[in-house]
Length: 483
Image (cartoon, rainbow, N blue to C red; front, side, top):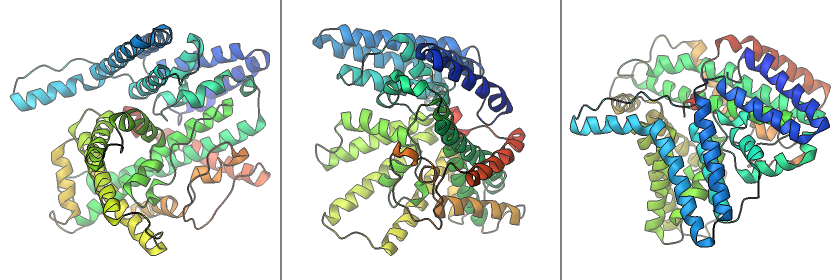
């Protein structure tokens, strides 16, 4: 059951909201319990077989958390190592066992038969979320929490399928605050508007770019123009698909009274790769920085070790996305670009004047082109198909464009590019309300609409929501749900 489905919007969401609002007026514990049951129901709607895996993960991590709290200082680290190892083994078995077997077979010709493994949806998200909690508990940065509320945090349905990656510092205090269980017309209005924007991104833009991507990159040996149109369309598709899902997740959570931090901030407008990672999948970037890059040493031990830590972080971040060498290469390219960027900045030295608008524009174009190259590997199912697209991008397969790519397909790409490059993002339009979310980074926009709780915006959101609902029947799967 995805957010952009009739079952979710017309059945699951209304029942969950009404039950939550009614119980929230009486007792927040009952409301939290209702939300936990709704989260588990949402998860098993994908497959009942997933539930035992999620339950084992939650209970096992909670027991490890209690062990960390109660252990003597000398034994806390041992508890943490045991718990993190258990999490990684669980993730490794379900997500990477067959990848390892296939890699061994490719290298040695061993012919090991792959395992019949059912990959639980969202396992990367709820595993990373809980690892971060345990690490912070080890260092005394996690508040005391009971099993029931911890289970709600780990299984919270708006995030569990495709993120954002939650942090306990953001969510557990909200779950403990009685005021968040009271009905709020503002939360409902803002949340429904966010959901509407996200639904429109998904079904009106991302899904309509799928045929363009297929026409540009789907055949063998894509030629120059087709390859460039296809990879540009894919970069827009994955942005609107994933940011649309995040907007819907944030919106659903806001309707319930809980605020998930935003996950995108116009990444296409980034002037370097570091900035890209502060704007793209922000929750994952924060996790990689705080729980991998900094523990590895960050930039504290010289430039060479900084480059090593950047590469390791991005290689592992790439592997997190999927059990394929193409994802490892994708992460490695990002690591390489980060090293080049920091090396260039070190060589230039500090104290330089701020770049002019022309220089920043050139940097944005260069960064976007670099990111486009990485998307080639992210999309490819194997290294050979990725290399064929790269050949097409530099004209080695010919110069022609697929005649099936007509004016309609080009117009769809143009619309997506206009919104991504020249329009404010959802955060800038909506999430400033009440100053409850961080202000988005300044970015050039042709127009600056600002959401208001008035009739004009209500009418606009109503029309957009109806259009989105009418297109739900042909929606494609969310790309990030596979991770």
